[in-house]
Length: 363
Image (cartoon, rainbow, N blue to C red; front, side, top):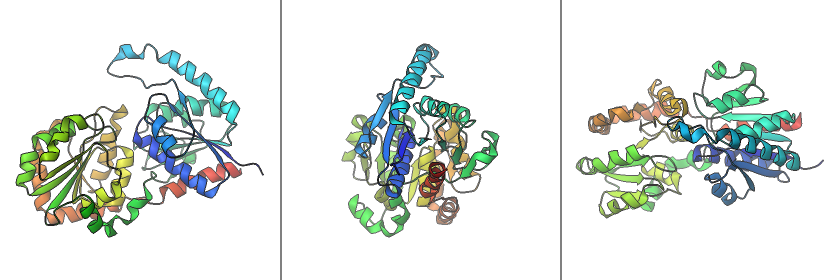
């Protein structure tokens, strides 16, 4: 029997790339002889991250619709046509047995052309409110793996499987790594640690919030692990001179960062939310309002409605001091949030998604 050819498309942000790589790794473990090809968007971070993970990738000339700068959309039809043509050429040459989409600009044209050639397709929808690309692709997809309930509003119910989002497997054992983590980050073991996450590129509003509250956080006797993001590191690295603060462009040892922290302040991207459910620490979500369909707020609200986290919108950041200090001083509230968010975890997501891919391969 010839080895399987597996096509995977997803990118634009870490939230689309890392699930795609996790799925590929699990498939590679099950089918060591399989051939893999990723399709991403040129000039986006997948063009760097996917080869680093050991996989080949082809780039499409594609970008998303700009909702706030309409003039930038003038070239979109040409980019879409070019991407459809190139995706068609890639698929003809690679001849995949299955095509998997994890979201992002490139997954649209790639899965459209796969559908036209009657190649089985699977969508992994990470958010509680799907973007327009996945809503369109869902009509013809064979299987749709989701992380939230009630998505039959957007997709055919008979195609939906609730699997959760793929997460780093090293997060499953963070509670045994607390001492190692505190030593790794050189933390004072007598003080609580706050972990601040703004996503892979960073979040300006969160960074500005932390900068303006550094004295307040010092007065609360907490230490701060602050992942400010690639775009902002040069601006904020000066705060590494403060004794209670450490600023990171990017954190490679996320398992240790989670293990070391007592409270987490985070954006509410789908992958982050899924990871934080497994981590089971008290979380203050500050969702980005600048994403399609405001899906980060919807992701956070799903957790908050189940008493698993605190939601602080960007237009409410003037209440941060009260919200944070109240949580810091209420050990019972911290414990309740930890238990409730952890109950929403779906730790076997990667395996369950690949089970669905395997069914499509063996049909």
